Amino acid sequence: MTHNPSPNATFDAAHQFARHHVLPFFGAEAQSRLAGAHVVVVGAGGIGSPLLTYLASSGIGHITLVDPDRVARSNLPRQILFEPADSGRWKVDAARDRLEELAPHMQLHTHATTIEEWLAATPNALSNVQLVLDGCDQFQTRLVVNAACIAAKIPLISGAMIGWEGHVISFAGHLPEAPCYACWVGEQPIQADTCQTNGVLSPLGAIIGGWMAAEALKQIAGNTPTTYGTMQHINVLNSTSKTRQIVKDVGCISCNAPSTLA
Ligand SMILES: [Zn+2]
Image (cartoon, rainbow, N blue to C red; front, side):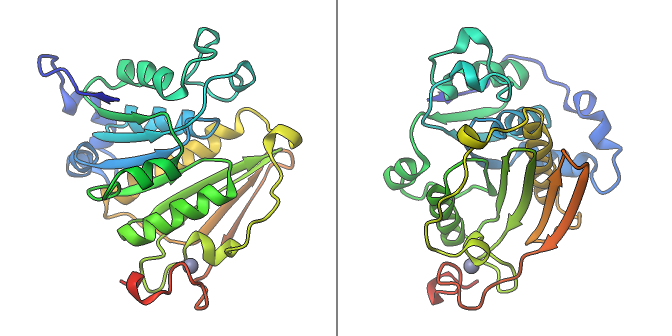
């Protein structure tokens, strides 16, 4: 479903984004690039909820959101886009209601389906998209999104969380020196732990989703330092954070195939 912004509403961008306009490395020019940007968000869950909120409130002009699930009561502690009355609704529908209130001038396309189905059904789905943000909880889905980003020659900002920990990494497998998601995890399916069985602390989503939003704004703004492959790992139980560099795997079949080299 598509939301088209009202042409009659008044909107003073200089006033609304005044704090970005005076921000070093940012300014009005970067803010205008956010307004012209189109990003795809995979998942409106515990990471996607704060991520979408900050992308919308920060002035991203066009978001495509893909999520196949309905809101459950057990989602509510983390998924702050939703309220108890949304239980049973498609997440993309409930998210649209909230995001339209927050950013009425933003173009929002929502799809209540899996990212695999959406990519398969949508020719050139990622053309004219600046980057993809993936906060889903499925390993195989992450590999599909990774391959689509490499083919479209756009960055992938990936976030995950479980228990008391989470991480954020920016990939750009289409670039000769930058890793892709498969460079890090390989191509073989793994039996990953899940939040359903291991639990997750609710506010972790705000940390991971907020960090992903900051990375997206930086990359779209330009003129800011971006290091692809740098993993930011956070453990709130121990109050620690670590940085680790993921490097490109020259044997990775996802990003080293001749047709995908930049
Ligand atoms: Zn790779």
